[in-house]
Length: 251
Image 1 (cartoon, helix red, strand yellow):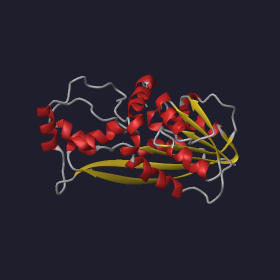
Image 2 (cartoon, one colour):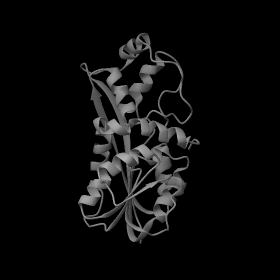
Image 3 (tube, rainbow, N blue to C red):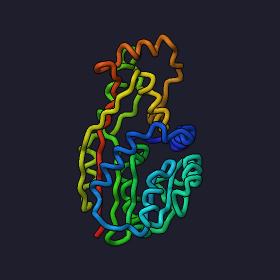
Image 4 (cartoon, rainbow, N blue to C red):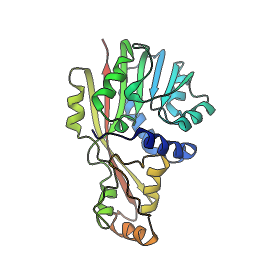
């Protein structure tokens, strides 16, 4: 994986914190998929790693779990605290969690590890937080996500405008040696125009590019070009995500 500027990632998500809930359809769909893969049991202690504004910290707390909400962004944690989403809040990096090992029955991480520099380090660190018999449940995105955005921008320039995510095969290799299972699905969201589709990414903070961003402004002319180049379907402008769901059990 590319080295990630964590400060820039935190800043992007911080800017999105106040209005994140208006744009989190993908997060809700991926969480639903992840919940369907979990064993039917109670989890006394839950770590929500990459908690965002705390929607699923709150979900687990309402289930009776004792929840620690962890995020790279201070603004996201502030939103979670306003919602009284968790019992404890921790600003930290998933790749360097400053907690003792073995403290949780469930480590939950919904669409967060794609912002890590090293997938194996991230998974090992999350797994280390599990108590015996615990479960690590995570979702991430895989290669080929956001093809419509990439196709539209190709009509304008050859610069990178969307992150390149890891291939599914790389994720499967990272799970080797764990007691794990996984599911891959595709999710397509639709929007009334190209600008709305791009605003959905900005609205959840997913705007930092691993390899650096173009500083060129999105002018009206460039937006019109994007609108024309976007592969629309019956007046709808799609964004397609390839979603990977992994569940690891600790013996």
